Length: 487
Ligand SMILES: [Zn+2]
Image 1: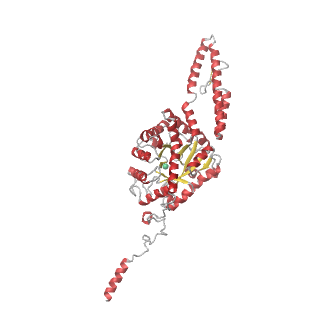
Image 2 (image 1 turned 90 degrees about the horizontal axis):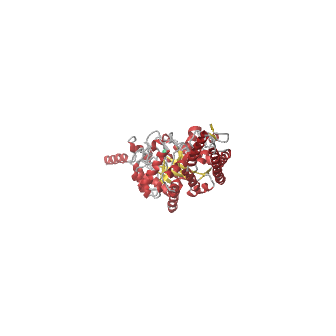
Image 3 (image 1 turned 180 degrees about the horizontal axis):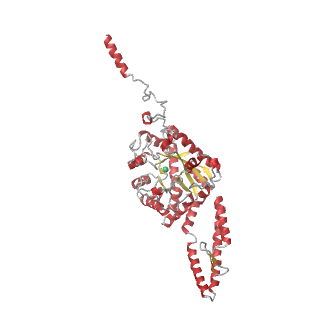
């Protein structure tokens, strides 16, 4: 601390004009923010702005008093203060952050993918009663961080790992769906369960985070259209066709790295049935994690726009989880969306990354396919490494400020925040409504495509695979020979 005289004290880490009143007003604003009270927040913010203006004017008067002094050392210090004051005047508030917060107050920020439900299983074996989401610190996501990050709508991932495939994937997925429902029931003042584009807007109007469900990985439906439809009934609104493993009907991105052999050379006949059924019932098709061939096939097959719930740009970081330029252009043609993933490994193809390098992905996608296909898909709580400056869900406004700093205009930013996803969602709902006269597809996957020791064959007749059925052809042959011999 430097003391110039009794009236002026400068703390190195504190703005020199800061006084007690401003500190109180900051606290008041933060209280309103934490409470999520938008009306109170905007009044408190206006009061704070006025308080800062007055404190700065007061400070300037004190310095000017100083300059009247005959003591040269004091004059010099006074000049330093004025310089400092002027610097602070410029840096005190980031105008881009201010603009970001203003835009986020008008347009809901919708994020495509968050794995908090998986953290609930991993850390607490889904015992939500033992968790306090208002204070938990072992996750990227908690309620105060959500409020600070202006997270208006979240697709929570109902994810279960690939090693559950053909075992208990369906049960575990149901349990992940259950915990998302329970999160909404336990914190009704913060979360609103949502299943439609309209619900997202309604939650935003009520200052709550719209909570939607996306199932991450086709293995979760166990090659069953009945299971897919039932999950829709439970509120699931997107299905990621694969996680990082092939299903009996779709190949995953590891096929493109050569580390896994293709099973279907893209999408099988049944895979096409899955896409058509998703279009019919109004479930979004998510192409994050699939092979490039599947991306291409689905973009040709789907009647509704598709999403990439958490994928970045391949041209910026050549990782096969990212989206190549020719697919970006096709997504644009199909009016879909690519929601940018923040995982360091997909942002820079290395273990480290920063907020500016994430913005590079936004810039690239905008350059290749325009602002209408971009969204946010942070992948928080699903990854171990996140960029410097985007450490948790409270940091979204900083990324939005970074885009504004790079010259994005207001309408480009609001498109990426939520308008693009809302458009895709509405289109998917329209396709569903247009197909409402069509019958559900009840043709099951061929048994030989899903045959494994954990699966029974009930319903598949005649049984061709259980090894118990004797073919009739040799029997007939023997009988014929016998008859010829007798005559
Ligand atoms: Zn993922």
